[in-house]
Image (cartoon, rainbow over all chains, first blue to last red):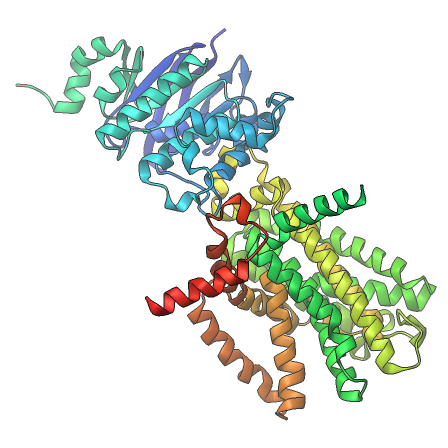
Length: 243
Length: 365
């Protein structure tokens, strides 16, 4: 059984088909990249899978159980967490309290080892992404790169089986990108499966073993990063048709 | 043996209260307010001042309940008097019809206020921000119409007076009665404020703030936003209902004014003036407003009632422009700066000396 199985997922906004008949699957322990030019439907696809948008047709199965149509918080509590492309911190709360919110969810609080307090667990999660020094600072003063990592710590607080990252590298400088790549590798080693949306292939190459390419809402290619980099259609989509 | 325990108790007291300037300040204020009846001479004017402070305490409970819902959870309610009024009318009806002991009536009033908060909270799940404010604004208007429509039960515009036996204390000396009521309401305010503050700073309170900041992100954290919003409504309604119920036994009547828009807006004004989202700000704001409105403008300078709102609204607006985060928060922020980076061994002592030194060096530099 696959961890996540998406079949024939379709979403139309009026006349525009944002996601068209997309099918793919994710296996346990994978890091999968999802790329495509602007407006390809990557974020829409994430919103459909995580319940923030209602799909027109198709199925989404997590460990064989249909999750399409469930409320977003219920999907999170089944073990599928996400981050947002534009960071959405809780600005009034200290950094550590941002993570505590996730630990207050049913799944998050159930999975805390009995010996730990939620605060302790939150601190460990912040350590994983390198934010423990900022734990008492209000989230509103954090830099953009820190907020990106805070989003990830928060998503990890719900103990997801599968983590969907929406453009985690967007707007980061090279140093921050390296930091984040390292954090993601650690998180992967801890046993989290990930799907990473990105439209820059380079950052993804280091992490993903398999890449899906979306264009105008349709899946046009799938394969290892090397295959994708040479794929004729993908090059066409990104660079335009050669003569 | 005893000295060890005393020393330990002192250490803990120093660490948790003396060390933290804002808490020390709160403690001093509490002591001051507890001492007030002893300081004041027993004359009618002072009895009146006490009744102003009694009202301020009751309104402080009401305003801090509003602050928990709006300042902490972001569910804007402009019709908070609905909970106050329901608490008041239930208490008055029960006392008149069944002659239940006052506290039993108040308790039932509180429970009913909390119960109606659930159907009222449901619009909050559908509408947000200004739209929710408009929906809640309509509720006390509906309640007022019901009061006027069901004259036989609610007494219409005459309200529901209750007999003198409804007082909390059966004292004949009016000044002593006010002192007793003053202590009662002040203690009630203390207990309510501590409970509300504890809730606001608990893990549940953190989730409330997360809903205020970004509802979508809370959902993405696996939070059942519906449940937490209803919880905030219920807790808030509980304390608003308590304020309403207690007020009936102080004023000896429930009236349609308990559902008025003025009352709802007073909660907003008091909380915003003191500092929204702080809980203690609502209390400070309530004392300031009621002292200004009912004492200063009536007894110190005699101004006709119609001018009151105008006169104190202008300074309130100016103060909010000067300190948008509220008066109380401005003061605690100033104090908080002092306590930062204080080594452990310095804790619990010399805080005021340090403050003077800092002021001095600031003046020289």
